[in-house]
Image (cartoon, rainbow, N blue to C red; front, top):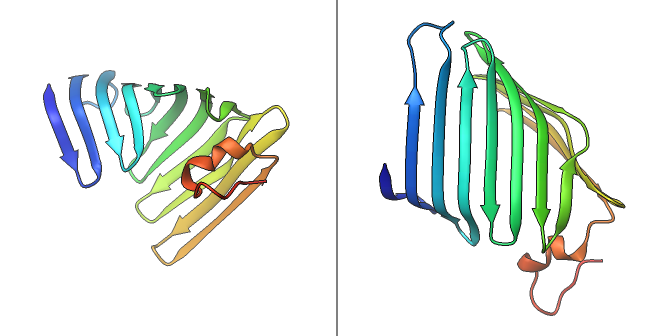
Amino acid sequence: HIERLTVGDLSVQELLLKGDLHNHKATPFNISAKLKGIQWQQQHIKVADITLQGTHAKQQLNITSQLPDGKWVAEATGSHNKTSWHWLLTKNQLNSSTIGDWQLENPTALSITSQSAQLNNLCMVQPGADLCIKGNWQDSTHFHSMLTFSALPNTLFSRWLPGNLTWK
């Protein structure tokens, strides 16, 4: 249990971490964290519950966050070998009274090694709108990403625009 954790611009009012870890790769593990009062620049998360469980070969990650204006839930399955992590994001759902309800269009793959990372097409959708990103990084010399979107609601960017500007 930690009260008041600050790392750079990130601060957490309270952190409760629990874990059941073992040295053997085949032995199941379970790690959970509850973070309260997360603040990063102007972003605020009331409470985040994170669990990671499984074995070295297969893991399940679950995140539930209470936001000031809604809720975010994410789920992923993954595996790890000696040189890489492979994750499949199976759920990414945001319910917000400010920017609307967004959900993951299709499961999305993420692969990470010490030398590279690749994110397949991660698309968040709501009726009549979509926001997608894909990209890769390799050896700290090559980075490529692509962001596509259509019919994004004005409320998505309004918090960052000056008062007399609007997004259309």
